[in-house]
Length: 158
Image (cartoon, rainbow, N blue to C red):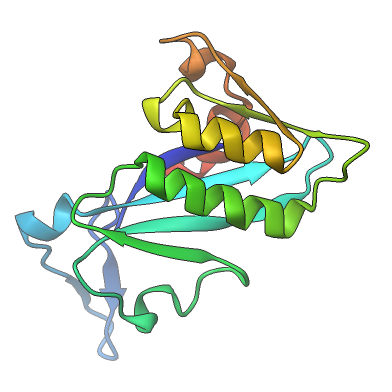
């Protein structure tokens, strides 16, 4: 399990060819350029994905914001796009719904050492739902986290 910020505006200025064959560039305001959505993703070693959670920096939810998201996406709203312990519990419920950890064979969840992942309610929830949570040592997840290398690196290269 890992999370990353995804810009709502592409890095490059998009160019469009009009009907007359001329190229036109869209103008992007500086306020739009720094809007990010946090995507919380999880995948197994066998390439099975849990649908992502999107943390949208808004005050009210608009269903149009996640209309084209993958089926089963968990939309969350917050004034900022950061993860907190309440959102992590919501994501864990989403994870249990899709992963369905069996009693006799607990699921291993590997996460970074963020404070929201190490809260007492999160640990108790994991214990009750047959999830073994393993966290990386501080300041090492950028090297050890598999999702940073195989999923987020190509995504951010677009």
